[in-house]
Length: 221
Image (cartoon, rainbow, N blue to C red; front, side, top):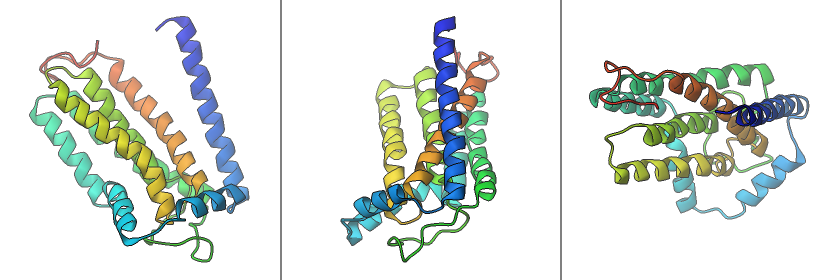
């Protein structure tokens, strides 16, 4: 990567970091914002049992124990196909839950209440940032990276995984707001923090070429 691109990357990361910090301060001081109410009203405007079910299914991989099972099974599959380095890093995506829990405790923003939005599915913990959104950005985002990097995987399979991953990443914010579990600023915060976490994980993965004992072929160039 040349110096110009590094400067651009540093600028982007700085903007994302600053944006997340400012957003955290705002929601900590003002737990209920007009923009959040507007987004919730618009997204929850059309409601029926079918949409309830679809939105819940979109969120299902992010709940416990489903998320743990998803991470474990995915990591095991990579390990069985001898991508040991990838398997380890897939397990590390689970740390996003710890990070979001710590930030939730620090910001301590309450969940949307029944008098303000329709609560389709009751949730616990604090509201900011959305742990679901952060986990999806980190886990599915890292899967996209692996599909681009790993060799000896059919193009058809890669495209399927990439498309499904993008679908989960970009539908989960709507799912969390529709279910009444989060505000718009919660999912935005989860997305920003997820991007920062994904970058760190990807940088650690790509900075050193996988050895023969870690992968059947080179995982990074």
